[in-house]
Length: 179
Image (cartoon, rainbow, N blue to C red; front, side):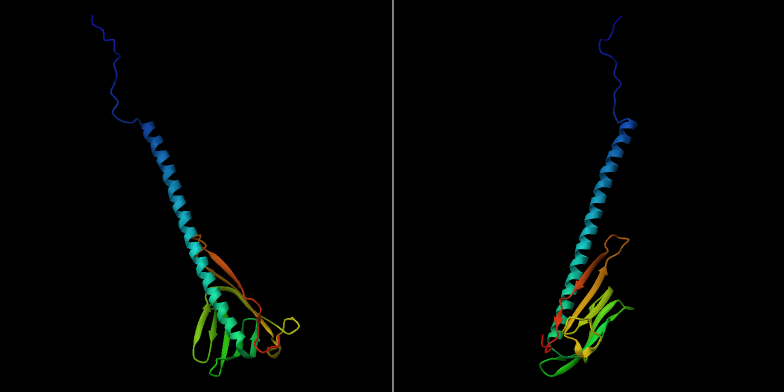
């Protein structure tokens, strides 16, 4: 009788079901991690871009208001949501109105010929006026300083890209106010 000293081996030419399931699970976890990371990075990039856009718009709006207030001959009318100024343009005077419209969520600037939207997607906006003693006033002729506070927002809550920006302008001294 001839005996083979080598044990008989069945050839394995593939993976077992358990090995396939373990491999698929590990691949799924890694893929989920990569997708989550890319989604997180994408949302953060959108938030950064949105925040940059809001800051730029706020800076432009603040500079525009400051320029007009610095050249103001007279404060004509005031309210918590706007003001009307007579501004020296160098070639004469112009009446300029700033208004926060809660229906359209924007702050606009209107001069004698055009209306410009300074800020869009404004969630809150107030104009504050103070007299020479630093007290809040509602009388246009006693206004010495003007402040604009506005909160703007953009992006979506559901998409995770919602960003707000708070604009608090410096106290702008009205030209010729004696301060």
